[in-house]
Image (cartoon, rainbow, N blue to C red; front, side, top):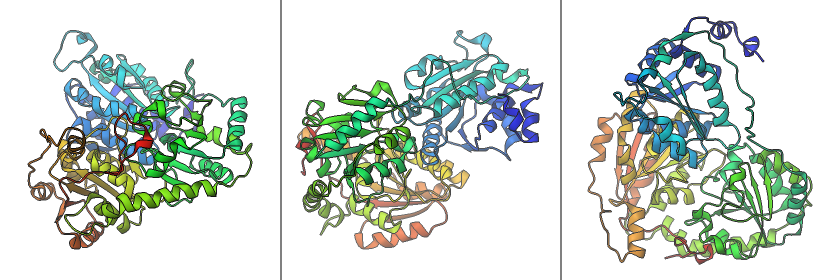
Length: 578
């Protein structure tokens, strides 16, 4: 179909311009896909695009990051909260290779992303020209799809395909590498959005027999547990999940990335799964007779030793990516397809049930966990401020209704455990790759993706310094991100493992930190530092009241550990409190 028939007059003119440069065609292609924000960094091989971008400043917002890795993480944050495709623009060579960590992170966490990279002229390919890299070869393992464009006339089709692949099925990052001569050449422009690709089936239709078998197992189950993954959020299936829970009465626990698909206070929400998850869903794993996995991939941080995971349970796996079925945990019933379609088909076939007595067992576990861990983590009687205490105080101030962004480490796990969520798309964190330095640029993107929501970043002193240059992006672009730095002067999670498993041999995990106040003020941020708990609430209130960006440094206990914890390789039932 010719999409120009449904476009506005100015868009129809752009869609039929007979002499458009490749650079302009790229930008017009972005506009056809509804792109409003691009994160990037200019350089020699992408200069033609940036020159064309100069004339589009009224229609396309470009955020100048301070490092290309920051561009990808910012685009990830934008995509995760908005549900749209994040877009990045960088140059060739080191500009392109600086994005590889972000691409790997986006692939692991199924984040829809389109990265456009400049490339040397096509005549120079393979000659080791200045700032030439074989970026297509480099990124094959960390992208959902990639391509190189050498002809101007091929740019619109490549971009249309990139956006379709990035957002459809199981989302992921896509790279389009465009040679400089393709950017500078001219060709007729015609843009057609892609709705299908031959041999690519992003979401198979759910199989009716497997739907029926899944419903039968749910009806028979006495001790079921629904395991909620990020696939529910990516598939916009939150309402469908609630309908299943309402009718089935089953309890539900979330993976780290599945948090906020279900409100924290939902009566059937029994907490977070995994290594630092809640006691109930971990310890009762062996009691379950049915596990219903919805849009999750059985990551090792969730399963622990897979040989013991759900040993007495049947497994129903609802998943859009067939490659995940049976990869870690065998499924008794595999329902391949979009969970937004699969869940209602199951819900309409099951009987109304009440599992309140089974759920009461999880609540008893909650009380055990509270007394053993949570009370001293959130309400310590003495000593320095604890991470969980700071997280809970911030959560109260924002009434559990801010977008939580985290870096990676102990602060990440404390934030996941104690922040609380009232609506979906409220968690932005690096799950599968565990990328330190993710948090600050991701918070920038999250705020731009959800400008009407408060965005709070929790970072440790190690992770913050990995991408601390992005404070300059906040300063230049005036992005009102609220940053809570939980400073323990350690690489906290590594130190915890050294304490528990390596006889307290703290090998190169202690940090000698700079003056974060000077750095914050030098980048135009308001700043407060808190060391005494009686000052904490007032400082948080000041941060919340600030109209601009704010860095709140909280100096916390240096050798605090995050519990509960399932030791690596152990069954989840061997969760420990100390």
